[in-house]
Image 1: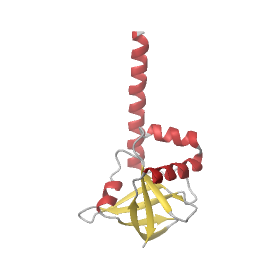
Image 2: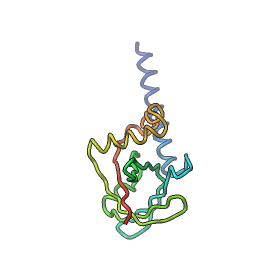
Image 3: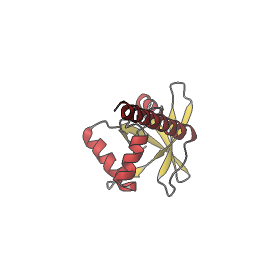
Image 4: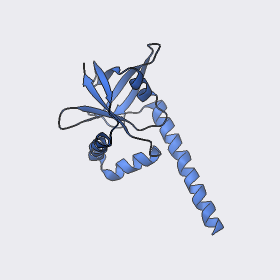
Length: 145
């Protein structure tokens, strides 16, 4: 029984290590996993006006609204959006000004889960969420200015 507990504990630690490595690499390298406008570059600005670029998956809903989500523990773009919602979006080679509108409600979170699950299915969504150590989903609507 003690051996089983050690194996399970080691497995959990190994999973957490892999997940943290995955999350860190995605944050640093910002790869584009999918083409065809399924990702964008969100340009945020810090208190000193310095520009920060972050690649994010994007979904457009049935009402034509554009959504991104903060689902990573270590990405500072969400904090910058809270401090300064005036952002730029680079999508399909075009840069346009937007206002980022964080909406932290259970209904909006459910809407975002549904949008992103449609993208690759619920199993893929669950795997990605697990690799991100189930970080809170923070929906952000991008409104054109």
